[in-house]
Amino acid sequence: MDKTSEILQDSFGRQHNYLRISLTEKCNLRCTYCMPESGVILSPKTQLMSSAEVIEIASLFVKNGVNKIRLTGGEPLLRKDFGEILSALSAMPVELSVTTNAILIDRHIEIFKNCGLTSINVSLDTLDAAKFDAITKRNQFEKAFENIELLLQEGFKVKLNVVLMKDFNEDEIIPFVQYTQDKNVSVRFIEFMPFDGNSWDKSKLVSYAEVLAQVKAHYAEDTLVSLPHEENFTARNFKIKGYMGNFGIISTVTNPFCDSCNRIRLTANGKLKNCLFSTSETDLLSTYRAGEAIEPLIQQAIWKKKAVRSGMTHSSDFENLANHDNRSMITIGG
Ligand code: SAM
Ligand code: SF4
Image (cartoon, rainbow, N blue to C red):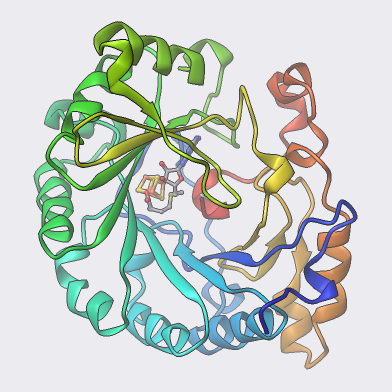
């Protein structure tokens, strides 16, 4: 099927062909913007999707037109059955990818290759080991960095996700752009977003405009090249003339990309979220386990999707934390 079926279309005509599946609520890092300081209450194991359930539910979405699947978490590579899941999904007619913190990549690189994976998104918020320890609360910078280099050596397309925060890493925008000089890597600066337990505050935001201002102050005007938008883009992309890699800015807070959104999310405990910021969820797993069809639930959930950020259209709505009755990011799956 090359067109999405009706069940994946919302009331604004957007087709949702991109499913992000969270495989776990657990992580081997504790990034402060993602994992609440007090931790999270983990779902009991019996309420999490088994590998067979992930595969079967994913295949239902694929039958209805999903042609892009990203495995995320928590840290997806922590799942012992990660290889089994990736291998089964790789037999489906989908573009597959993974978002990971890179710590376990060396142990999984053969699985990636065997499953034909070509593109991996890796989170790395700093190029400084001490700052890495501070933001992730774990002492794993070298492992993460070596594994990113390993992916590049092995020819993977690597996108580096950098969440920017004031007084933490805004001084690393230029070093990250510099990193693209002789590496075939796409650095994506992400505006810090509010989720449960991450103490979001607008004053901590480093905006799209601030990133570009720093880049323009550092590089001559004629060396900054705007790249064409990708389909269903979430980042505005640029490169410095002559550099191998490129960089982009994901400005969900100051300039969202909802018009072209094609993404839906399935949490590790089998709940469908029609938007990253949705405050309601649809329990697919219980219905699936009861042996009933989940397609009507998927259709209703997607049809109800709001035009912009789950109804927080204006920045004042978005900045009001009372409107964010959501999960923590670690239990959503970014
Ligand atoms: N553990 C994997 C990782 O870190 O790549 C996958 C899960 S993580 C939740 C997915 C992505 O969400 C990461 O790129 C992370 O930087 C991003 N993320 C988490 N919390 C965020 C926040 N508050 N604002 C913006 N991005 C966030
Ligand atoms: Fe873990 Fe990724 Fe969240 Fe960091 S961003 S705590 S690595 S899930």
